[in-house]
Length: 340
Image (cartoon, rainbow, N blue to C red; front, top):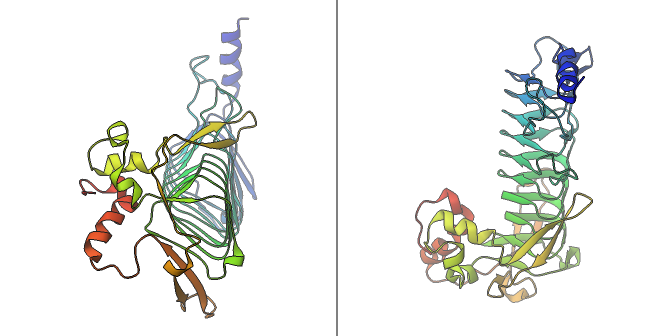
C-alpha cells in the first residue's frame, strides 16, 4: 500500500467528529463544526471542552474550562499531503475557569475567563505549522499569560497579574494591577496600578502611560518608545510609507527600523535594535514632567494613586493640535486620513 493510500485509509476510519460525555466534549483533530459549542441542556455548561489540532469551529464556545491544543502537521482526509492551515474559532470563548490556547490558532471573537488565561508561543517548532496566534477581540481573566509573538487586537485586562512575552502586539490597552512585559512588544496603551516590570525595545502607542505612583514599584530595563513626537516626522517615512495616512502610520508604529524580531529554536522570540535612532521615549526619569492621578473608582472603594508619564506637556497651550498629533498613533489604521 502506498503512503497516499495509507493516509486516506487512516482518515476514513474517523467517523465521529467529537467524543463527548457528561463532563467533557472533545473535537477530534482536523474536524469542522458548522456551529459553536454551547450548552443545550442543564449541566453542559460544566464540561471541559478540548479542541484538537487544525479544527474549524463555526461559532462561540462556552464551558467550565476550554483547551485549544497546539496545531501539528495534519493531512486533509480527501487529499494526501494537503496541509490544513491551523485552527480557527469563528466566535468568542467564555469559560467559568481556565482557558488554554495553543499555537496556530485564530480566534475571531474575544476570550473571557472567570479564572486564568494561558496563551502559548505563536512561533511553532515545526515548519509545517503556521506560526501565529491571533485574537481579534479582547482577553480578560484573573491572571493572564501571553506567549511570544501573539497578536491581540482588543484590550487585555487582568484582575490580578498580566505576563506578556517577547514580540507581542496588543492593539488596545494592557491593564492590570501587576504587569510583566518582555522585549520588542507593541502596546496600544499601558495601565499598571501596583507593579510594572518591563524589558527593552517596547513601544506604547498612546500619548501617556499610567504606572504605580511609587517608582520603587518599577523595574523598567530599557527606554519605552513613544511614537509622539519623534515618529511624527519620521526620517524613514519614504521607506515605511510616505503618506500621512492611517495605514502608513501603522507601519511606522510597528517599525522594523526600530527593532527586529528573531525566532529562536525553542519556539520563542528575541528582539534586537534596528538602525533608526530618531525615535523618542517616554520621560520615565523626568519626575517633574509627571502628574499624579488618584483613582477613586476602583473596585473595593480604595483610592489608588497613579503616576502619569507623557511627552504631552502639562502646560500645553494648544490641546487640539497636540491631541491630533498624538491621536494618530492610537488610531493608526482605524483612521483614514489624519494629518501628522
